[in-house]
Length: 247
Image 1 (cartoon, rainbow, N blue to C red):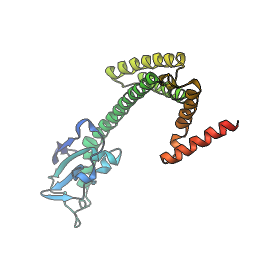
Image 2 (cartoon, rainbow, N blue to C red):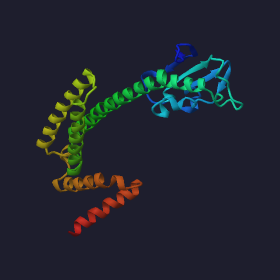
Image 3 (cartoon, rainbow, N blue to C red):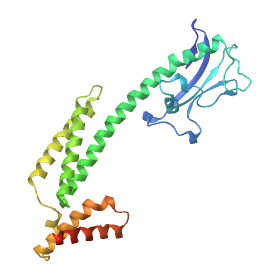
């Protein structure tokens, strides 16, 4: 790339590269993040010197590269953390902002928006697959079933919103619309099928034993998140069962 002043004179030359598919910022610990500025073999400032030319400072870390200042008026200051104050210095940064910072910022923003939409589709597919498997085995409890219905409706709404959004490519839109229909079908199946995981327990167990296990599973599902360890979880379930017996 070339940086030109107002008269078209070259005041900087350089190169830049980007992370594949712009999948987030490059880690600072990698030591290559950011487009940097040099004069000869002297590094001016650090990897964050050009952060200010981007619409969001963090966008600089999505790229790597160097711009070599070639105009003799661009003189490093004594600390070498910037150039000495001058008119050409302001022109240099303005032109980098106009020709590099702003266009690259738009690219990052567009790609980030696209990646966010793809994440919604991928997450919805994961949720659908998990709930489909849960239904196949049998829901642990009514709470489990209700939670599954709630999740399906929530992600269906997200897909509906996504399918109507502008800027979504055709492939992603078709996939979103296809998943909406799958969610509708699974919701209908769950509402009609009231069986729980108890139905998969061996018939060698009596009805009363299955009923007890059903209550245990229900408490297990409702209290799992509250327990810090298996012992506490077991105690919670025992407390719940004893409270039920008193009733």
